[in-house]
Amino acid sequence: MYDFKAYPDDKQIGKVAEALVTKHPCLREPGSDTGWNGWKTSIKFKMGNLRNKMRKIGCLEVAVNAGKRSQGHPENEPSHSKIKKPRRSEVNYLPNFPQGEDEASLETARQEIAVEVQKTEKNTTLIHKNMEKTFALRRKNIVSGSPSVNEFLNLWPALRMTSE
Image (tube, rainbow, N blue to C red; front, top):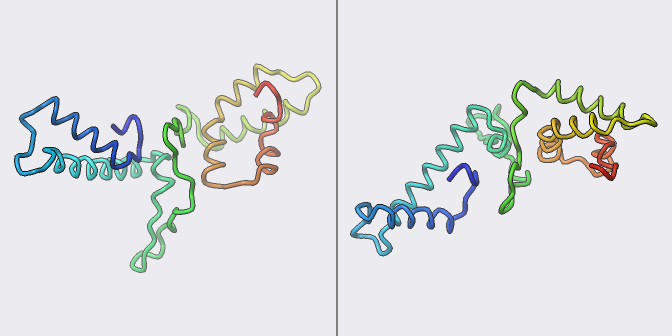
């Protein structure tokens, strides 16, 4: 279920629990009105635990929503309640960086794009390749930084091109 959506709603979890009980009738709960309410609760907790594990190993999609500061631990990150959460059917909401890349290497690719766009004879294949490579960095800037449109277009001038 996590492969499809990191934050499923109540109805989706209910459908998964119902499908589990219909595929394996021996799992039906005799005291429950639907036969799968307990499984629904178990799946909810399992998803929460899985998100917690994914956050600890560095998955950006769930780490961006994980700030929890309290009076007992004021050094922790503040709450991220104002950050945009993924909408329905939104794929690659906040993807991890490509294999073997980090933020510094993607920043150099962004600078290559900016230099290439200013040239009169633009190498569109290089621009397109670097734009695909830096998608995760662009998405991270949008979600965690919340820049204005002008600031964002100044950082990524290739987005003004019709081919991108």
